[in-house]
Image (tube, rainbow, N blue to C red; front, top):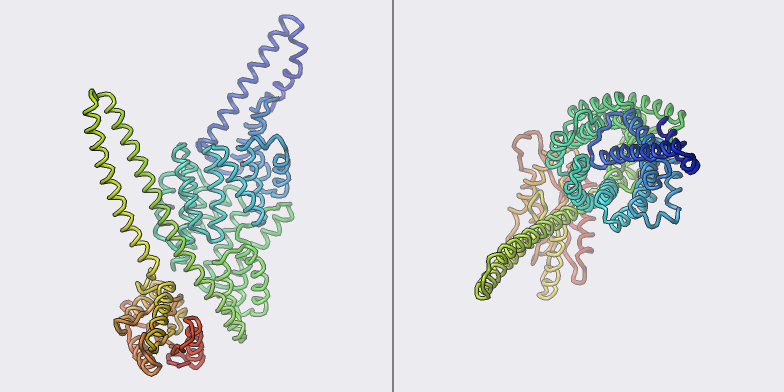
Amino acid sequence: MRKQHQSAWLWAKQSKSCWTGIGALVLCTQSFLLQAADAQAFDSLIQRLDNGDLVFADRAAIDDYMQQLKAAVPPDDAKRQRRLQREQCYADFYDKPDQGIAYANQFLHKVEMNQDLVNLSHFYLCRAYHYGSKNQLIEQDADLQQAVALAGRSEDPLTKAQALSDYAELLSSRGDNGEALVQLFEANQLYKKLGNRFGIGDTVESIATSLRRMGEYDKALEYLELSEKEFAAPGDKYRLGFLWQQKAFIYGETGKPEMARQMLERTKQLYLQIGEPLYAAAADVDLMWVANQQERFGESLEIAAKVEQQLNRYQQQGGGEKVVNAELFVLYQAEALAGTGQLASALEKFIEAEKLITALENPRYSMWLHRSWSKALAQAGDYTRAYQQLVQANLLEQQLNSLSKKQRESLLRYQFDTELKDEKNNQLQAQNQLTSQQLQVLESAQRWQYIAIALFIILALIALFYAISQIQRNRQLHRLAMTDELTRVANRRSILWFAENVRQQSLQHQQHWCLLLIDIDYFKQCNDNYGHDAGDQVLVQTAAMLKQQLRAQDRVGRTGGEEFLVVLPNTDVAGATEVAEQLRLSVHALSFSGYPGIQISISVGVAQAGRLEDVREVMSRADAGLYQAKSSGRNKVIVS
């Protein structure tokens, strides 16, 4: 800082000293040299940051870098001063979001910033970061969209990559993982062209996070391993902590809670080492999640008490930033209280958690909330409200499954379009190179004609190849869109389309037709007791048995988690009841390799379509029969 003050003083004296002889001329020359030296040092620091070459091991390293940057910025250099202010918006208000928002507002409201698209985009990104720290998601979304638009207009690849990455994180956090992945892949390509290793690694980790939230755990783990191996520089503890935390989530969500616990303990210790108490508190909240999974509810409440002490201490110190998973903290408290029999306190906590989680607009969190809440209400004997909460959870699960499928289809389309674009670009480059070489060797118009004909044939063959390839890909996408990915029977859209066709044909030929709505009894207990792999095996074998027992003209489809719909053309209610009973007996006789303790049953609702009824009305009556079958003890067939 002494050097900076000296330089500023020399500039203040410059206009007077340049008129006072040889000594003043030397002084004036020194001021120019000092400014140039400072500018070079400043630009070097910024270049290392923009290239992704810097690794900040802890908060002290960030503060040290900012001190160097402030000391090196030349006085009266508006461009470099603005670049410094851009970095200060993040670093100086790291844990003071209200002050950070106020600081960013100073620049966003300046008229002269309207032409400075790059810096304007970054100040929107900075304000969005601070809004995110306060969980003001609507404001964060608006700022991120504005930042992406400005970055696109600026045509600055680094700014565009950073804006796309930040917006993708928000999209992924609220469940829009397909669109998030599209933006992350685009940002990743921009970082690769720039050679920015930090940005490449950051997008690889974000891609892994989005894949995990879509349930693509194997792919997510591959990306995390790639990032840890290729992009985590020695001493990069922030990145290492994030990688460990994401691995812990995968272990926890795939039924390996002990591995998740060990990984989260390592993560917490790492954050404590680098002086990040809020990150350590977030790891403690995640440890509560694991403890609840293992039904170690007393341990979960002990962790909760420590977290509350940490948060109270932090708030007393004046911190405005929140723990990133504060909403889930309340949910995990509620689960632990219910698990220890403190039902009254637990139900109060569930109400508090509902308010917090609803504000996040995150369907996955809402589904967890309603499912846990339902279980606690059932423990308390309030079965009506427990059923209502369970219905909400099941609806959200169906929506998530549907959304996940759409996101996968969107991602497939994006990857296909990207591959096609790359192939066309490669083809164009090849053609340009070929043409350039030909221009150097062609000697006559006749040879030009031969080459033109040859190129025409090549292009025709390429066009034919792409047409055939596109047809094949479209067929594959159509099959994927109409088939349930796990059970390989028709999905909800496909079976409803089939039912509508049967309805129209039956109306035309004056034939009866029926629907069977089937639900696997106590399927959640199977998942809880034996794990999701066992649950998947139950779904697959049940679907196969249903399909095996039906006629060629019948069709079975999966309409929800453990729910199936069977369409029986040219069948009256007596025949449908007989089919339903046969299906019930066949499923009940199933055995599952590797899980000898599992024996399942199904409940079936039967409905014969009325002449003027549409598919939804018939399904509603079948659902009423299914509800009656479940209410009267399950493993039954009820005609409605």
